[in-house]
Length: 257
Image (cartoon, rainbow, N blue to C red; front, side, top):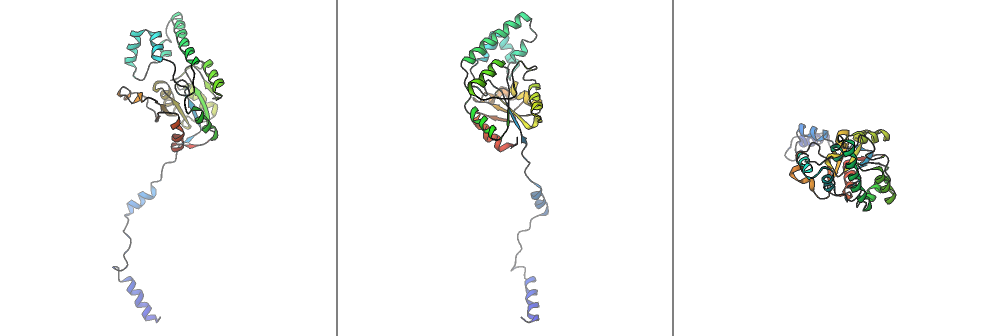
């Protein structure tokens, strides 16, 4: 092509904006914001600590009946009205006289013994533990029951937790000490652990005060009641069955041994 014609062609291309429209302009502020908005990384999870009664096992202990047997109906109703998240029966009897306290512990032990006779593993517990094992995620246990009950659970169902702390470990839940002890044994930080349990007053409070993540197991939806709307400690997550925890952990955490 002659040089003159080539020059005219180039001039034509740059002088006819109507024929060659540019893309819709993107404001610089929008572009910068879009480029900067990267998703937050998932927190690392290295261990799961479970409650036992009502979490790893099917609820069989009639706790309201136990509390009434220990406190008497009138005192039970009074304390229950003041404690919307539940009654801490072990705390209630701590300052009783030795004789009265021994009688109370015997009553509690009788109810717990009846529960052991009907001990059943919670649906989904074995599968969840197998899943955690496959990811090499540690499993621990904290219960306000006695060590005899923990040993029986291990024997009956062939699933062990380590450490497994009962109420013989002092101070017991809801004090964060048991959970902090487990973190120390595992050599992990509390924010690398999640506490799973069915009690706001014991499990969620223990986890929150230790600085761990918390998951409330609420099979019946009881904690959806307005009476629990203003409790001091609220869980990070809530599920209605252990089966849901597998998906929860996958979606919310980076699982790391």
